[in-house]
Image (tube, rainbow, N blue to C red; front, side, top):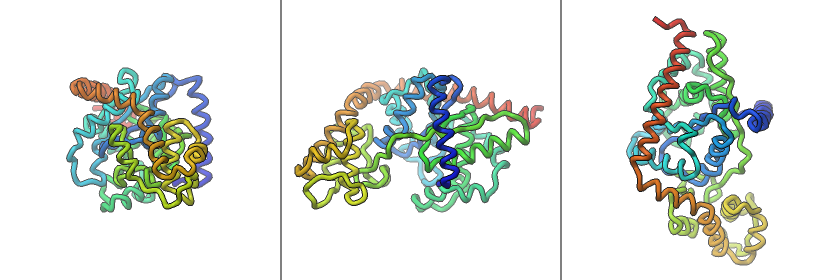
Length: 349
């Protein structure tokens, strides 16, 4: 987690870029992505997918990487990875990502992007990588030993961002250290070899954090996440099993009643309403009425997205074509950038 001083500076820069985007969207290239470890959920949708679609429609050059290589930073298997990748693309399209406007590609299919790791690793120290708080948090969460791939995770992310000359990355506060590493690498490369890479700004999202059904962070591994791909029946069943508490009167109190408040927050974000107002309306209706309200709000919000998903699933060749085209375009960009890197380093023979 960045300290308050660096966070305030990052926030000011983010706000400046948000304002400039309204006037000069063509000056910006966005890179963001996901690890295909399972299905995307509501936290992904409200936390990043909505912003991606917004930037895409503003006219920003938008790029999404499906970071399949990064699955093995803390996992010992790639079982189901192909199915996860295909379903991730289906989710993107169903949520409004347009492959004509946004390049969608897979990490493993762009070798020249990954080749940037070699010069980039020479620009960071072991100590800088080891003290990255995100790496520490992910290692602790997985219980996995610190592999070389996990240790160099922030450098891989710098490759992802800089290969396409990305200069904005939508992030939460906890991801700002990755942006700091990327900027260190870009500045050090430019100083040592010549100007090739841009300065990168982390675009801080204003979307409130959507908690899981149990009040903790929404996560596939916690089993507290509502997936975008769930049916209305599956959603209602999962919400019905969510824990509340013994108090019948429903109130919004995130500290004192985390489970109840998490459900109210979900209903509020999905319906565009204040969770406190929803709590007052439910009142003595208890946990049963609360869960019905949440299920209706979620299923109402995601009905058109899920309908679009069903249409897309009927044409798997279309999904494969989108990935193949995105990989082709990404390889062209990576080749151009790597040629610039070699030229700057005097490695053209």
